[in-house]
Length: 228
Image (cartoon, rainbow, N blue to C red):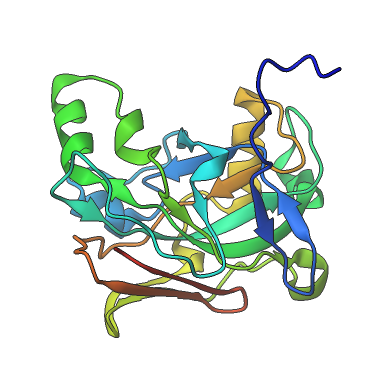
């Protein structure tokens, strides 16, 4: 007889290029990891330790499914990001060993209730609900590093209704993927199934119902969704 008082929820999972599913355990995100984006948000880019926040594992939106416009906001924003899929866990991982812990990469979108975030920042309150809401993490296919390697350079861009909104370069990350993995592993022990959204370039902006989003990262892949 099961000890659960009700059936446990299904395992959140993301499709892998070539077949199979990646079981999503946790989603971590890096804030302010491109200098131009930091400036557009009114900040001063520097090599201060990276800022991390989280999203629920079941906030992913896969296979190009629609993303509902969330409640309690009038200013939903897009953020295109390189996503790291962790395949081997560890704590206190050295940066020169960090890529050994990476299973693969994907293109993802960090959807943000910007007005809720701005109000929380102004009042010094947590801004979890500006980031960690339902359907807030559209995700493309995860491509194993064994096939595509570990991208360090390349275009990262987002089109909304066919028009370019964001257009950046992976080489402009303030904190590289190895540095990000190493830093995060000092806060928590990473585990297989963790996803790390590595930050967005400049050009973030508002979305409306009916908008069609297409994000592309050179050498990695695409992410698609429609706001409904």
